[in-house]
Length: 344
Image (tube, rainbow, N blue to C red; front, side, top):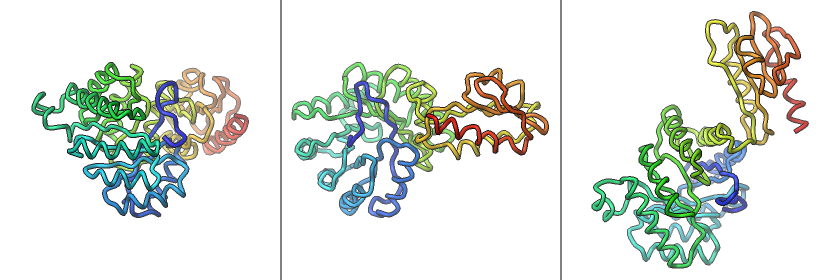
């Protein structure tokens, strides 16, 4: 997908999707650049009309990140997006309503060596499968994906990845498990329409965490009602939590209790905001509320602080190196972190 490898032993990539009108080129580029800064690997843009499809040409000229055109209903939009330079196409065969239209898209994509994601979705499953199963069950989603894989293979098109999304977490997990056993094409995983940053993050962490732990998933997107940058951060954190991606800074912080005598939450937020980008090297930072949860429980951290009454400790790998006044804790922490980043 552009310069990003997907599948096999390639690192699991994190995707997001712009939430601007793609035809508004300045707004779309601003969001794409914000996603690039956050460490996003691939970005998808909606193509609801020809104006948006044609806007891709200008967007591609000013974007380093691979761009995927998201297509629904109209096969001609997919063809125009490919001609405008899209690095990949996402189609939902279930709402194109014609195998002939899918054939036309495949033909052009094959000529241009553009990969396609077969996006099976519970909300637009084929009518015959709904009739067969009664609802968009995991079995129905898996059967739809395999049917379309065979269709693409019959046209000798193999540069595909597959997604089987539902807003129901358990159905999505089961659908991907079935698909993973039936095919070896790369899988794009996600819980569609997951919800707000709170509920959507929980659903996505459970669903994607289970799949990734089972070795299922080659690229992912967290679908949240909110900033796409938050989607990237959640996706990156899931991968880091499962030790599937080490790049970037990991922050450990205690939940606080009655012993805490510093404003831990504000300190954690300040550190997160300063070191949120994946451009930073791998580093584990501990922000602890007191000496009970300080150097001992966070001894694996590269560096950390433990708060106290009016003072705090700075420690590295569990060893205390400084005792400073509370007002100087964050400033001193940043001073100690900078050399660690520059050496990496």
